[in-house]
Image 1 (cartoon, rainbow, N blue to C red):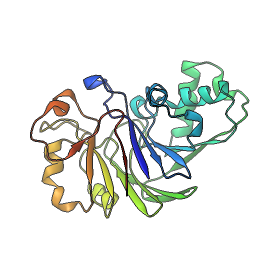
Image 2: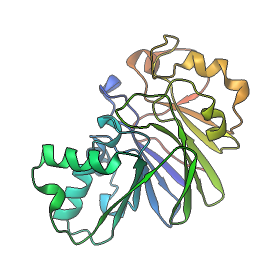
Image 3: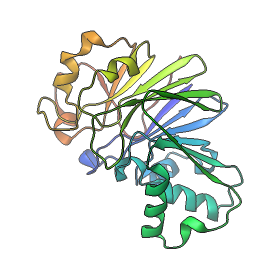
Length: 243
């Protein structure tokens, strides 16, 4: 299974990084964890054909995590995509995507295409079938005008856990339990702000987490440049095989 960080940055492009977008490809299907506004640019830079993306799983509905959906849909429309695109997200996803498409490109949400945009909304702690994968959403602590989720992706006997944006919550323990990979926000090194997780807080709760590997993402410049960080830090274009 190949994991690629198309975008590993925060909302503001700290460190010149693109916004949240992680590709998970097991050779049978290709999924995105989040699709920030810059995702289409990042995929094309890396030679990833957007039309090969089968589904997108959204952690929450901030622009740096879902704002790339209108561009992904329109790119598929103009490049004659034929296979349906599924989007799995929290309650409110359908309304928010429609509104974003109409703001950016009026009339685009109702255009007839060769493929369908299939939007499915899930609630916290609900397991959802996604082709050959299972997605479970856990409630996160992040204000976004709609529920925010941690994501647990089980695919090909491997588990990838993803915090999304969040303050520390006990639900992270369940999300990461037994995971082969835990992709976790570390916004600042030690500074604590509402609705976000710092590296220091993650370290405090490390003993509660049962996972094989942790990779940090969604970092400020301070965290990107910090010394003495124990865990791996993601960067745009980072790719590896999850054995």
